[in-house]
Length: 302
Ligand code: ADP
Ligand code: MG
Image (cartoon, rainbow, N blue to C red; front, top):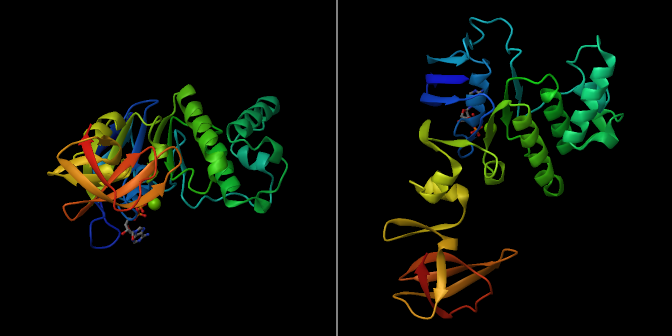
């Protein structure tokens, strides 16, 4: 398994990451979440051995992952990393890119493997197309398939679906994460999208102020968000009497002591998000129907 022991790192003087510790078991999926600039990409690069640590140590099973000072060639066979800025071979085909690291010794197995991976990333129809003609999202899918080709023991994915449009994103995410589980490949995913986490991650870790703010199962962190930052990751929320209350926890009832006046209504698909005034503070709740501005309603917390 991956063992991260008290690592710290800085590019220049200021420390970007301080005393970070966690572990990832074989086949387990961990999401690293945090605001832009919180150090998610830096952390993945450290796990890959791209930089030298200020302090702390990193292991995959018994192998210590070392930075460039102690390891001339960055990267290990058991680990694949798909960067936010993926690099591919632009003038060769999708299929050739995916098969680039596969041995030519068993050509039939190689073709079979490429076919399987084209299906995972839904690019079968593009197998013969040159990569340079693809869209950003399609290139990202090629990069994912290529990283999966040699079945690493652990994958590091940096915002793996960020370039992929919403039409494809849902099914692609399911395919890729299902495939990783099927092959028992451990996975560390940096993301700021809750859709990448919910339903897929076994555990999540929140980076804030250079440190681990919280770590746990998505269900537990969602049910009991300790800080507004954590709540904001999951959705719209309010702080009422010093308690974090999600918008979906507030329900309109006939009568209650929580009286609010409607200010805004937003169509959200299967519900409306209503902004309302509670003693001079704006609170948000979800409701099945739109409500007129200045309507007075009563709420309860569920
Ligand atoms: P995230 O992926 O969470 O958006 P990053 O790891 O990319 O965050 O960046 C964390 C911090 O490190 C930011 O303040 C960023 O400006 C800084 N940083 C990132 N890469 C470099 C670099 N190569 N040199 C110096 N500072 C960097
Ligand atoms: Mg990043």
